[in-house]
Length: 95
Image (tube, rainbow, N blue to C red):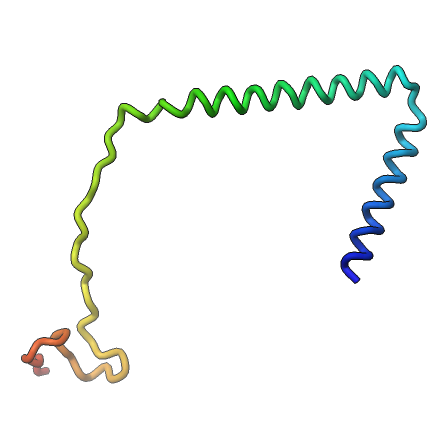
């Protein structure tokens, strides 16, 4: 069912685009095509060059490594809030 809906949308867009392009002259079609190729070409070159430029940009900075800290464990029993435990040690805290 979804496949048929997607096919309908594709066919509608294709017909609409063909009607729109059929109205303009071949010279204008060529101008539109060349403009789009030029725009997308410049955009792809810009993205490529900026990616190459950014490769070595952060190379001079050192990565600081932090040591793992111990987690603060919960001191209460989550089921019975009246009992307090010392996280596995033998001694229990008294109220």
